[in-house]
Image 1 (cartoon, rainbow, N blue to C red):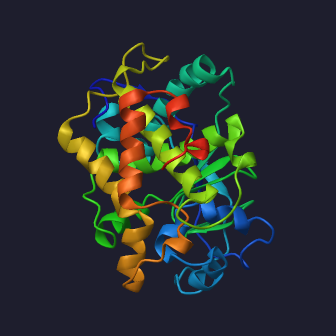
Image 2 (tube, rainbow, N blue to C red; image 1 turned 180 degrees about the vertical axis):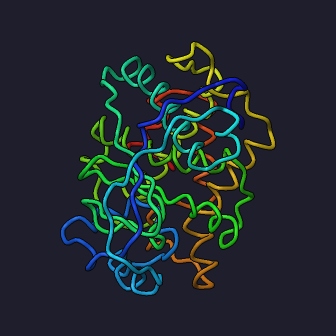
Length: 296
């Protein structure tokens, strides 16, 4: 999926945070990080994140915001990950600004987005290379370490590609949409193949699919042109590959050598692909109500 030739994206939307190591995982917020991609990696109790952080090899003490991603062109967004992240967030903003109130009567308010290197602090705990991208409801912020995209391919077998990266960002934005419509407040923080935690993750996948399906017709309000070129079948396969790579069954099989549905928090690879496809094809918030679906 490529940004439309000639497009330009303003700076100042995505914050940059420096690397560094904090004193430890912040208390109180870590339970909600089950929403984060970290659970894909570990397949275990998220409380073990703290131990994983001790092995990252990160040194230093800085964790504050160090600026913003600046303005860039579509050509840069097609080749540079930081620019692509900023442009993707702006495309998501434009899509949900129109789509959310039109379909739900809920106003879209944009989340903060932080691109960090190494490690930074959120109100849900420490964001690091060990946790991967996640959405923190406590500060309504999406945290992304773009180095995660390499690990998604090298460790978990995703095919890569720009749309695969955009899917991850759109999925985290999906959690913000769930926050705005009240789904995150309603859901239980439980485990299991039919748990609310799984349903919340699949719903975010569906919202990511909605955006992907409408992205090529979403107009940049600053330029009057569409953000993205139409998605090719090869690019769509990249997004589905990324979704499959972070399925509970795939991660558990890769990490532990066996699958335990009783500990699922994100859904199987097939479920993740199915719900992304549902959003992509139907384009309706109502069709993505996985939290109340009879079958998932």
